[in-house]
Image (cartoon, rainbow over all chains, first blue to last red; front, side, top):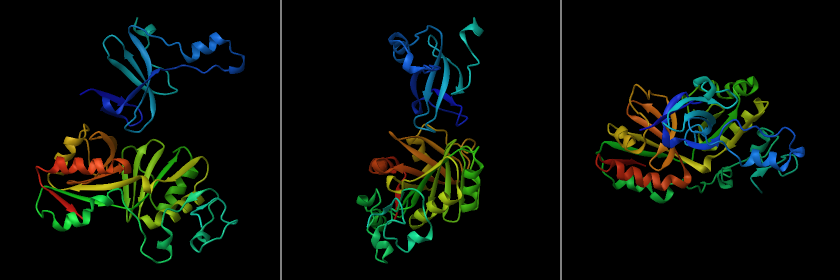
Length: 97
Length: 234
């Protein structure tokens, strides 16, 4: 049994209720009409693949169906924190280093 | 005549339609015959299972009782708690406030369940849903949404001393009294599908399930409760 804390339900829920949705905090270009191909490609396709702390977007798919962020250690799979979209992570690589 | 009135002024208006004037597309899901005083033809998602005759010939003793609350009116209500026109509009129409996180309110025939921070499920008798939706639309303002999903889901009630054991086989959620008091509502995985689980009483539980999964859940529940004895209520 592996529990994940949903910041919207404010409860720990079973892992199978959740889905991972990739890297978090990817900002859409502010001026999309004037982006270079490289900038678009970076926004659409290129993702970090760190060894260690990673900020990810998850969704409580079988529960409240809300999206939220998780700071996760990709080596130990430990979830350091969960926080709502729009908030900033409390645990970052810079802080823990 | 279509049941969908985009603009009631432009189309032939029935007696019921003049009771209020929706300013948006609103679907009446009651069959036309019901309005004309005839028995409506309506089939719940478990119509094929014929629970009424199963109840008549089934066992009278067992640890689990199952009853379908069929053909009720289900309204999904969405809006922000920061919008007072939405919150107050609901309270004015229903006479009680929207419940908070993982909670429910039941008053008379109506019950409302918290689904998400901006979403609630209101269940009322089937023939009241259309007019209630209109009244809610009249008194709510701002950014909100009401969708009649009556045809898309159904409600099962499980009760009896062994009902909780059947649920424990079906979901990973902690159903202990300490974690799941009476009145709590949880949307979670159930068997290999999902259900909105609400505790009605110490030994009584309610499941809101999807129409397309109703047969699967019905078969699952029969299997899961076989060892305790299943009494079907028609």
